[in-house]
Image (tube, rainbow, N blue to C red):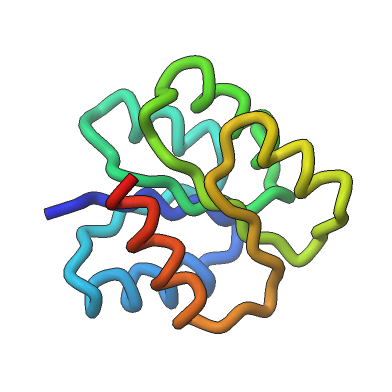
Length: 119
């Protein structure tokens, strides 16, 4: 089973995404910030990461940079309510597979996750 890491400081967002991923046949792991996410990445294989940008301690852009350096094979999907064209371009240049602004349709995220797993 493919394990997807959800990184968001909002508990409800993590729960909703974990439930959606489970219905799609994925195993979910979750972290409240980038620091927790890096610990989970060290603990075993992760097929893809879905991360918010604005979080305490290590934010989404720093997490994206770290994943790009340390886990370049792991696709990253950015989800954020604070999206700008500049941050989207920067994220995609670093390593992000896709950039989705909140609120988003779960169907859109399902399609992006499916693409990430196949890449």
